[in-house]
Amino acid sequence: RAYTKDDIRQKIVDENVEFLRLQFSDVFGNIKNVEVPVSQLEKVLSNNLMFDGSSIEGFVRIEESDMYLYPDLATFMIFPWATDEHGGKVARLIADIYTVDREPFAGDPRSNLKRVLKQMTADGFSKFNLGTEPEFFLLKLDEKGKPTMNLNDKGGYFDLAPLDMGENTRREIVLEMEKMGFEVEAAHHEVAPGQHEVDFKYADALDAADNIQTFKLIVKTIARKHGLYATFLPKPISGINGNGMHVNMSLFNDAGNAFYDEEGELQLSETAYHFLGGVLEHAASFTAITNPTVNSYKRLTPGYEAPVYVAWSGSNRSPMVRVPASRGNSTRLELRSVDPTANPYLTFAAILTAGLDGIERKLEPTHAVDRNIYLMDESERRRAGITDLPDTLLEAVSKLQEDEVIQSAIGKHMARTFVDAKRLEYQSYRREVSQWEIDNYLEQY
Ligand code: ADP
Ligand code: MG
Ligand code: MG
Ligand code: MG
Ligand code: MG
Image 1 (cartoon, helix red, strand yellow):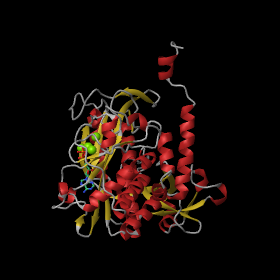
Image 2: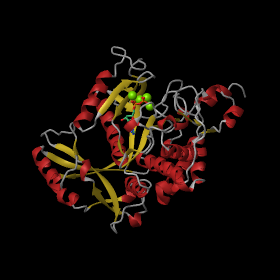
Image 3: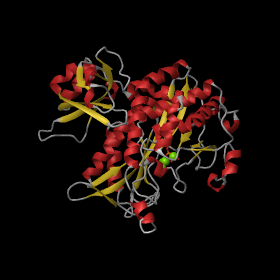
């Protein structure tokens, strides 16, 4: 679906587009917008639209603030819902950020992912394919339009209406996604009450990351239309499953899926095993990126289908990495630790770099763990080579700071910004006194 500049000019006239929204993501994965009237189209298409980067957290200092937006024409899309009173529409383009010197900006996660993908090409692969499974809760809005903590239904895994009240909302989400070019493979109620999942077809890393950002926007917009608030927070409610974002991944080369080998053990190739070895080796240090909030660590606890240990399995679903049963072109590894607060551009850059490092160093994964890890004691886990994922954001950040490979995956500029911001975030959290402390300590001391 490549658009030329002329295609875009034509569509804008045909569909009565009045505004252009240029989208990009900051280091933390927040979507940012610069919106201009359609009169600025030529400036946009010639990469001459500027914005002030100093207004974006973690970008740049005031004295170097002017940035250019380079729209990626393939991401052109007209929002089906954003019509104003005279039927005018809003179109969006996802953009890369360039400095005044016309160089890719080191603080732009999307440009960084492109840089890492070039490394992959140099290593002989053509595509890093990613299929993600983002989960979310639907919460009721109050009269003022603020989210409440009241879940929208009491349904469970694959339940049907009338228990599954989110069904209409989910259906509309799927329809809007299809209008916007997504191939939706499945949409279903998840295990927890009020929790849903929509699976869309895998794509090459850059598109997959763009898709996640667009997906979140669609889900939040449609939920609001139905009087609901969609949250991707990893653990909004304790005692029930949290929101994960499983990442299914495979490397392709000109011959097809490089993870598949009919003759290999479990029909996996040497490449797949080395990639897995790299992912396991760097897992603890990329956790700050894949699970970047204080709340993320409340999901990574035993008993709620989220992983706690660095381990893999060819059969059971509890370890951090699972090998789903499909083979041939669907041969893939599923990383189950990631949650939807992760910046997808940084996440894919980090995982890919970890995997490529494994391939380069011919790392062998630990043995597959086919029994329930939660029934093993610590010494059994140690003998099996199973280590722990970080317990807190603070520990995860320290691990990231010890790993040069993962820091290089997101680039020095963003690694520094990210680490500093996350340490502050953790300190701010640490200063707060929680309800748990009051409930458990107040009357005891
Ligand atoms: P689960 O069984 O874990 O619930 P889902 O069916 O929900 O899995 O999601 C599987 C995801 O894997 C989908 O997004 C699908 O497009 C994706 N996928 C399929 N083949 C590949 C592949 N070769 N590489 C990466 N992702 C893939
Ligand atoms: Mg799924
Ligand atoms: Mg799920
Ligand atoms: Mg599914
Ligand atoms: Mg899954």
